[in-house]
Amino acid sequence: MNNKNNVKDVFSKNKEAYVTSKTHAKGSDLTLLVNWLEAQPEMQVLDIATGGGHVAKHLSPYVKTVFATDLTKEMLENTATHLTNLNNIHYIIADAEELPFLDNSFDIITCRIAAHHFPNPEKFIKEVERVLKIKGKFLFIDNIAAEDNIHDQFVNTLEKMRDYSHVKSRKITEWQTFFHKYNLSILHQKKNKKQLPYEEWVTRTMDDEAEIEKVNKFIRNAPEHLKNYFQIAMSGERIISFTIDEWMVLLEKDGF
Image (cartoon, rainbow, N blue to C red; front, side, top):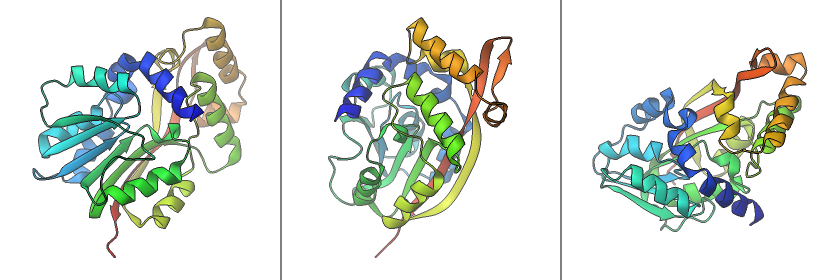
């Protein structure tokens, strides 16, 4: 439970930042997920770890109901105040690894930029499979680690330094193992480099100048091959931006 308490602590303190964050509020993936999912007016949607509610907001005009869930009560309350004009979104405090829903309840399940906070990813995918209807769609988007251990270690060390609620950005092959085990077949997928504006990224979870400087030094002192891979942009000693790998994948629950 320690990491889940960390998640509650970080996200309750920074709830407004996740509503306004350019990384979360914008992005071509929000438009693309609407196209990929082909949502219909009678459909029931579950958005896991909704955060600022961006996926719920984009899908709500196309479906009957969206259940926007999050582990953090304060996050949900804040998001609800921003989406008061959308009457078909219901807000529920829920753990992604212990979903409070019956089997085969949802036509669509989504989870965007959140799973790197989950301590037990296999339990999460098992729960997705349980509450998703047969032939239902699961849209998953998250930061990922490269397959080689050097890049994996760098990005996960960096993320943990900046956000103590971070657990792990996992490799695509790790996620594929879970999907295969729980009868989820890939329909579409897209991998891209996501550019992060550094100052917004680091101050979204940090306000101690000494701790921020530790993160700055970790990046500035990285070997050139890592600076090139993560496309670290500098202006003198100032870090402007960098990129991380992101994976977007649409899956379908197999029939029996």
